[in-house]
Image (cartoon, rainbow, N blue to C red; front, top):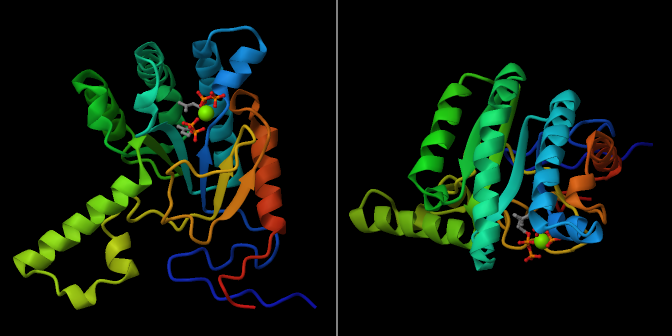
Length: 252
Ligand code: IPE
Ligand code: IPE
Ligand code: MG
């Protein structure tokens, strides 16, 4: 007899895994391993980042084909500023280049773009191009691509706490009414579906300050594949693995 699906918390995909073939609504990926991929080939790190951008294109297509609603990609963490200036500038350059190059394709594929993280730190030129892209893709609804740029989960949670504190101080919010929902509604991911599946490539088994709150009941998948080698086949295998898991949300 099939086990009864556990009751999902509000906002979670109630059908996820109940029938064993349901696709995750929201998938997030920590795209790691570009540098090691390049090093293995005797190439500069930037070559790994370039190859990583190609993997984004393949993954996006696979996610759309699978019927995933939201794909969140960790592109630059708030800790990545610790890298040498040259690498940061390469990453910014690649972001601008691929944004330009892929925009028509994103439009054609029905992709909507959303950003999380303090992306203003990337400078007015990139900010303008990013915001223009968001505007151009705003009416699309097939898949929401969320790109995390200068994102850090602890800062996101602290920011949300500060907003709630300000509202309480101003007298527009009763402190006793603050619950999970109230804090979640102040996070940058507010309005997105609950995170179902979190993937990290490159063999590292850590979250590196990514979606700490949102990952509470996400299924985790860690693969040794380096990000530039991730493709449609890898993504579909991850979705199949998700379908085979049994989520319980604390129930039995
Ligand atoms: C991920 O690849 C890309 C970013 C963090 C921007 P890395 O650059 O971290 O590659 P490794 O981990 O050094 O191999
Ligand atoms: C996490 O990868 C950030 C992104 C993939 C953008 P890192 O390579 O920066 O993480 P650590 O330093 O290995 O934890
Ligand atoms: Mg890394």
